[in-house]
Length: 411
Image (cartoon, rainbow, N blue to C red; front, side, top):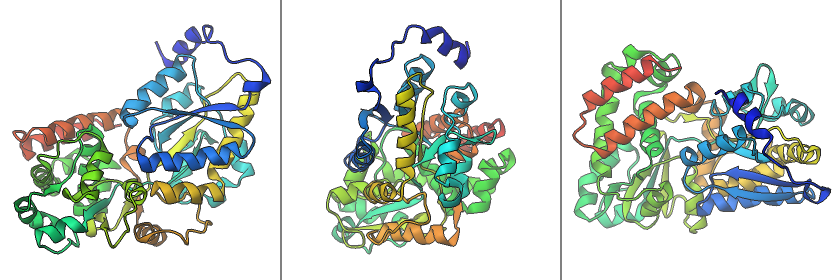
């Protein structure tokens, strides 16, 4: 049964709240539950509540891979929320195609989104058949190496300037009882780490040939073999992390128990809420200190089609509030991400955010894998990388062969 048929079959069983008292209460689902993420969500709720409406928080613990199936099930099952988070890209593509999401084109035109949202690829990811279906909230980039200055001081080595320095410092860190690289057990973390190695060690051309052009020959070739060799090094350095969630791995760096972590710039929110200062307590290296390219992925909010007219009006108000300049500043300063507007004042940005803004200004940006391949292909990659990082008996050569097959059949 397709999505539309499922929704039609179940819609009759759903009773929406009646009465004006509930008209502007809007449930918003998302997977932002860590300390830094919760602080950022608070800014969104504050902005929406200031309009006279009420943000009803629908946080789902875990991660996007845990939350998305729940969100999709509710929408297809006739129990839609008022708004829901997805990553920039193709995750909500089928829901839009099946007519289950609101068209926000009128809101976007009124707010002149095409003029202020940069890069244009963010809004492009929201656009299907010429209509806009989501409100971008931030730019998140994966290509960051977070380092504990305390850990390297304890190990008696200099803070690395790039990935190669971290690899070289790994023996000294281990000798000092410090985990060289922190990595959580969620599949998306291993998958993201691998993609970061691809662009940061292999460069933009290799990354695009694999994920944009979906060239299976390149995916199985000599240049990608170097990436798999580096992934094997990362696997050895991460052995013994023994944590599951990404923010638990970040906490290992925060507390000096690990030398570094490859993680998106959302990790910065955890450092900030812990009172750590960029450049003093921790060091951030975009592009792993090698190739300073950042993917312009991140998050956007989609708005399921509702029968309640007042809630539909509230959806438009929330969409506009998300893109509002003041909301953009307040949210992204706490989230650690970059704003989707080019016309906001970020004078309060810390050292790491300024590095990201500088790279963005130079145009050293590239689409994320969420934007370049389907959710199904991403899931296949996640499964492979999760197995590879969990099982040292899987050789880089064997993993690369499976990877090339995935890219060869990617859509």
